[in-house]
Image 1 (cartoon, helix red, strand yellow):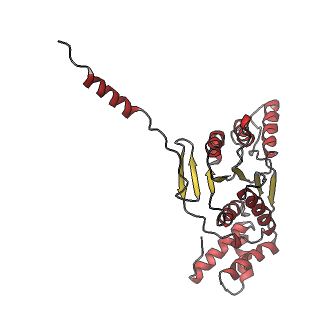
Image 2: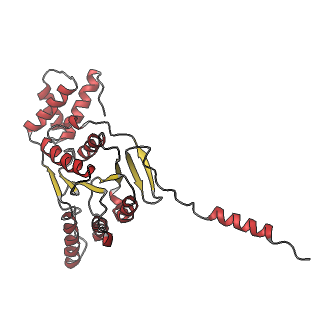
Image 3: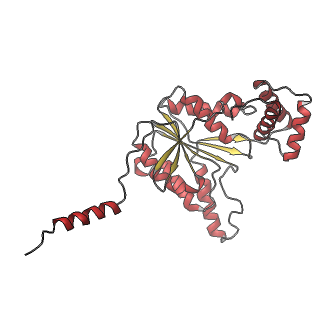
Length: 279
């Protein structure tokens, strides 16, 4: 007498179901305004709001005005440009991008920021395809971007910004920060032939051309550095004798003058005085 194969088939089906990868749910962007994207899983991890207010960034007024203007146009659905914030380290490029987003998002409830890792640039085209289908508007931020992997990452970014036959997504503004204007890695072409290095260089420079808005952050001179320190001290009610002398000594120990160094001095001073700061 033949046995009923149904129980065996049920067990096989259940085992296959356990082995099968779960069906990805549509991402939800209702939980937060800032997210970090994980291309390995496709997940969008919510992050807390950026605490530093735009008004707390001093010494970069011209850069603030230009970036916020472009971002506000994007939030309103008007023509905009992808933005490259480039310049020496510590001048506030990343802080400006996040603080400006928070300021504009206060009046734009559908605006979201998605941060991507610089080592995952090749995952940008599929990410843009996911965001294209959404009703929200997205600022995609890549901090400290450079093409250490060569032309492959440059081609992926170019593909994402151009959008292929579909065109670039109208609801995505890409923002990159970099210490180098043309995004090339240090030691570019040292271990490659001249022709291959030249081709990589052409590919990477052509990506820079896809950014319609370039905002430079030059090194801080002493007067601007001291103005930044004075501005922070006044904003947070910090008073100390010989403030300028101490600020200059702090910069000398760090070997540089920048907005970041000014902010670190202010944090040290606030801790000494027992005052709280937003970040």
